[in-house]
Image 1: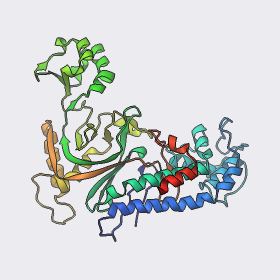
Image 2 (image 1 turned 180 degrees about the horizontal axis):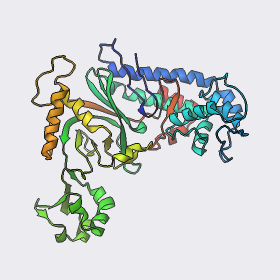
Image 3 (image 1 turned 45 degrees about the horizontal axis):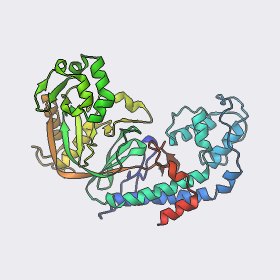
Image 4 (image 1 turned 120 degrees about the horizontal axis):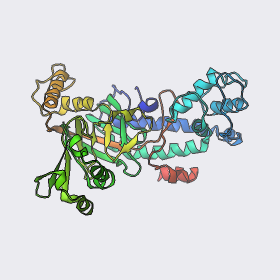
Length: 412
């Protein structure tokens, strides 16, 4: 059994290979394994409760320790790092902020989705100060969430798991992770939905029709202030009768009053906000996965920037992964049996469609389940607890409950 929740930003649920399992419960068993890890970690933390209550929080307002310099906070930092499992109990004593301390601080930053500088800054201080009781609460919250999605993960075929709270996606086939990538999720005001969905179609060179909310809140002001924007960004406008309209013919005040009077469509191309690929899901909220023309945002650790849809860092790889088994395409059947079609043929088919620069819908022969989960606390292969920044604040209300209340909720 391998990779139960991998580490850091490339970490989480369903990330393991279980070659010995041949039943319908491939991905489900992966969830069970992560639940077991959380339960084991719970036992470790319970033993640390008294020690945690007796430790004074580290002051986050004092000037931060410098590299290889003595500082009054270092003994407290070392003690806290040891209690939280980032530093061994046999680590040397002293008040110097040496490489051992800084390496342990990087672990804190890595597991809390912070920039890994090794410096004991305010956010790192706050993360290290979080109580053992809060960690125990997060274990209960996330075991409950895992329990609720484990039935949806029952499949021996292909499955996509999106951990919205981790900004990461995993694509599995028979329990093995074949593809994973960073994602961008919906901002807090336009959240990505949580639940189970199905991916049914790959679109190459997609067009984009601006939704009403985005038109009114984001785009209309740009259109009126910059008359050349629509042409530069390759938009075309249609009226209610589907006639093409010039921007000069539009009464923009009328658009604000009646945004459905016109349809603004961005044609395929390098400026298209959906990039080169779109992946249609079954939901009625028009939430889908897609490429993006703002790839620089993937350099951010926290990536909640979209209007609800999921932007993929490696969309072409996702298209290949889907089509090599479920594509309705003209390719010879693969000789080795690992996939229905050879990857070389799939790549050529995609490349040919891309070159035509017109929108092409490729309906899959079989829908792929997509679990949109929200797991904010998990145990990595290194044994350390990883904690997301809870982008939608779904933990806030639950963390106000007592640990006993959460345990009871978990049982019910």
